[in-house]
Amino acid sequence: MLAGKCPPVSIIIPCYNEEKTIRLLLEAIYQQTYPRQFLEVVIADGGSRDATRERIAEFQCACPDLRVRVVENPKRIIPSALNTAIRASTGEILVRLDAHSSPVTTYVARCVELLQRPAGDNVGGVWDIQPGGSGWVARSIAAAAANRLGVGDARYRYTRHAGEVDTVPFGAFYRATWERLGGFDESLLTNEDYEFNTRIRQSGGKVYLDPDIRCTYFARSSLASLAKQYWRYGYWKWRMLRRYPQSLRWRQALPPVFVLGMTGLGLLALFFDWARVLFGLAVSGYALILAASALPAVLKRRDPLLLIGIPLAITTMHVCWGSAFLFSVVRSSKS
Image (cartoon, rainbow, N blue to C red):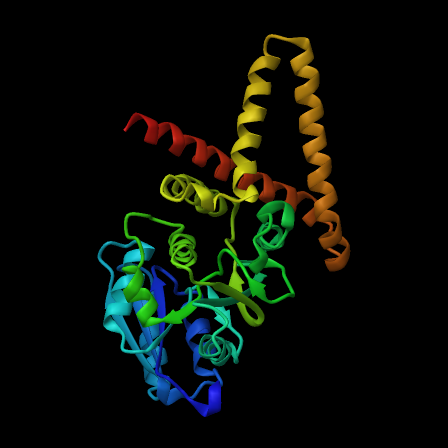
């Protein structure tokens, strides 16, 4: 921070049914090195049906010196949760976190320092991805979520180098930036962070990533929940790209191309011998590539089940993302 200046900071959290992790997040916020008297937490809850509210209330009683507010998010979508929480907040700087996350103790202080420098209009850091549950499937999903074959050039999942990027997870920015851009786009059910960062860059601003800003992120715990997550990502990515076609990155184009190519070859294989050969080679080659990409994690963690789980998780990510993207293209062409 510049010369000890501590502007008021509001930490914004969208939330729905997060009883397992919300207390971990609040405790991590309580341990921040940033002066607590300049912090507030605003949680936009979409009507949680589990014990989320109870966990929040328990924390409020245990740590009354950290201001924590809960506001209602009746639309139950993330962009409306963010806008609702921001409107209810008072901070000059907004730090957006997720109920599945746990920031390091210097997270807020480093964000404020970089905004004051200024390094960018929206600053963020790197995810340290951890399993969201017990068992080999949860471990595999967490490893796949940090695997470059699964996430492409999404630098916030693996990089050790600071610099300007196209997007950051969550992010910290001045309230004035949010006001100038008109808030988060509530017509998108997901991809709201990427879309917000796209508008920052199109308006001449910068998005900056610093690996010293670190946050533990708890990945999905089952292949079914991972499939739903990546279906949602793929479907709404096309809706965003219709508005910002120049924001397309190669990592986003590959899954739909892969799904389209494999589907086409599979159909041709029903009728032609040459197509059956090509289809078999493509499936075998893909399996070998997946196994090779999983091998470093298997050896590093001495966990042989990852050799099965990581390929399963990455395949789920590719197929669901790519299929949803193509489905969204077809659906939007009919509307």
